[in-house]
Image 1: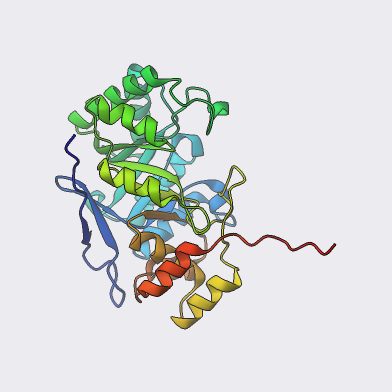
Image 2 (image 1 turned 45 degrees about the vertical axis):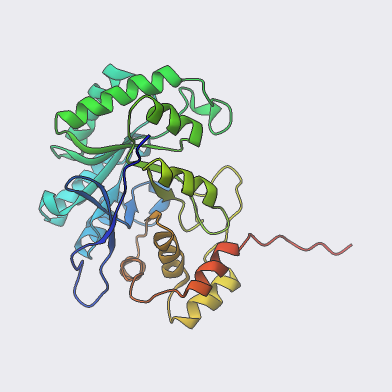
Length: 306
């Protein structure tokens, strides 16, 4: 199978005085900023999603990550509208909840467009691979294959109609992605849990071979980290030491580490200072030695005295 090359390019300057945010080419005339803003309520504690999205966009962010399951699409849409930015300057991602079949996919996305108040999405993902969410992550495997293929056909129709510009998946394992590629389909993105202390470089390599760009949720190992996986939090003293050597924040280091590995992180914050810092995560360059060191970090375990 011939794999499609996904090219990393630099965007135009996002805001004066700061380094440009890299972009990932997903297809002809479709470039995705490699720093997204998540719209889960739990990721934006202390403010409403509308205000959080509006602030992100007005401070220079351009990529907003949404989902039907977050139940915040209307709020995100209000924030997008309030930002005053032209639609063609934005990159908007949303997700249908899972393999819901051909007809329901078409109906649901039409409703999502109305909720957000736009005519098209830049990226549409299948949020989970399992027909029954309780089977995620380890129980559905090949179960639901036909539903996934039928749902994907719906995504292809939506793309052909111009309602979405790029299509992909989320939380799919390698076998589930290969179900699509072996059927002749090409997902542009696979959004998975990925952060310091929990990242599978073999999986990243295999996705790249398949022409699939990896995007990261829980990219800062914060409140959205789930399924009891390990992680290196932003208060880790080893991470603080690396950040201090660049006069940077630990979040900036974690975000740049992800992008330098070729993975697009999703972040979120109500704090103006934190948003500005996240958008400045490319104002310095992590050394090759520090990148390898960050790769090696594992979650600290409590030492018990016996």
